[in-house]
Image (cartoon, rainbow, N blue to C red; front, side, top):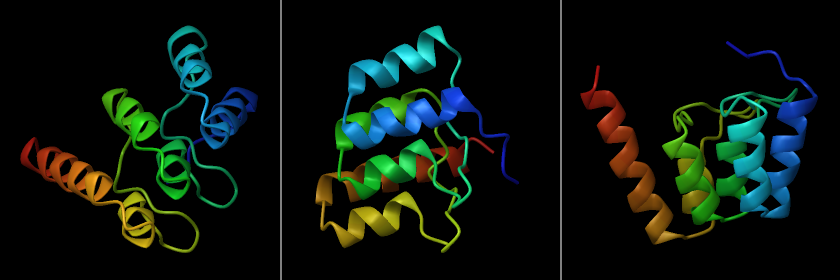
Length: 105
């Protein structure tokens, strides 16, 4: 189920695409941005971070509650992008955190 996508969520996605961790932190901490908001294509901040191969931002988003199991309109997940980018550290990170989230249920 998609959440409402507003201007703050758009700004969050832009900050992720720019690789601007400081702006991502400001939006999430000071302006209550939605870490799991999906745009019209189903892209979340975590998907965008994985797509641009930015492990640092992805780690921060997960620490703020990003759901790594959400997929976009093409059914791609952050794991798909990590594998596409051949980023072993990101693959390990996603595996570790998706396993942990299943164990908490």
